[in-house]
Length: 304
Image: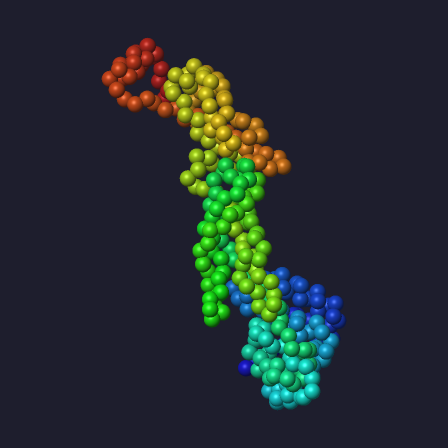
């Protein structure tokens, strides 16, 4: 079993001050935190960093560790077996095999340089999931029921994920890609530590009639050929309901009409664009005759 060099893990010198150790711990904890780190073995590194800091932050613990040194195999029995003192870390803390091998015996009643009998409290892991919501919900902010996975503890103590229905508050103006944090709804903590959180990432419903581009929203506005040619008073769908809109004459397919400030809600709202789509009526003999009459009256070729 390899010796754990806690100074090396934190990247500090053996003569480092408590302030330097604390600063190094914060830097390394940020670097390897499983929620943000892209390092493949981030969780393992994060545990090592926490274990190293737990040992080195206390003068008593650090002094005992320094006495042990790299000859830990020769000294481990005597180190953990003195009598008359308090127990060492124990009670289910998530320590390395090195730590348990050297100091595990102290938990049964011997004195240990690592302080009294205690668990190293760790916050439970966060759980990340995705929920799909329509754009309309992001405009207004609503309470909606979702089926999410939450941790359950079995009879023998094992933790598994179970599907549960949960009422979730969708905040107004939350952007797709952002997450709603439900504190304490993640995996259970260890050693008396708090539960992790449940992070619900917002994903926009792909079947929506609306398209979101940045802060701007796009929706198709269907017009009959004569409405496009003559202009018309119509209703256009928006995420907050239908709105009246006057279209000018001679509207072309694909033309956009802007509704200022009716886009995605934020400190500076985006715009809503109604995109003209000209729809030809269903084919029948009478309609065919009328279209032919128009063709005969106009000397018009759109490809010229």
